[in-house]
Image (cartoon, rainbow, N blue to C red; front, side, top):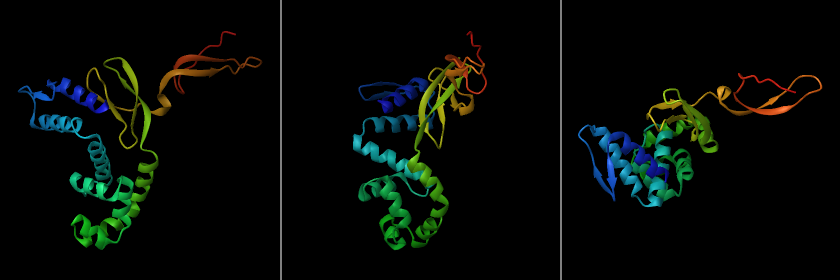
Length: 205
């Protein structure tokens, strides 16, 4: 569903209509927009297992900052059996074995493995904390929403105006909050709509 929704949102913003797999474009589409639409159509119509492998390959390619092509990483994930075993194979296996498998020079693989120490902190974070639920707000549309997004890139697009926004800082998130009365002999707890660390509310007891 999420892939279909992404495609539907993109097509709506670009003026593209899809009917039973057909694709109609309008003249104002740029080449990049047309290519992106085609990629999304391909992903939607892809076998679920193949789609998952491709998405894993993209994550690993991002981790290695473009050192590998997506097709290369898909091959590694299929052969090794998953994205984490694939990363482990590339970083820890004998450079000779990796170079033969990936058809890259041994010196290239050795240099990459030496850089793995710098990547280790990013890798640990990538494995253990892949995503988080964050709040986003659009001032123009006067609306806010919550969305689970990758920790590495906390952005979300407003569905109304299609503008991308960074996440609201956690210390300024708002919603239904709990208040505690600090008056002696009261200590009442009550709920009010508020901004975290900023709003105050009056106790009527």
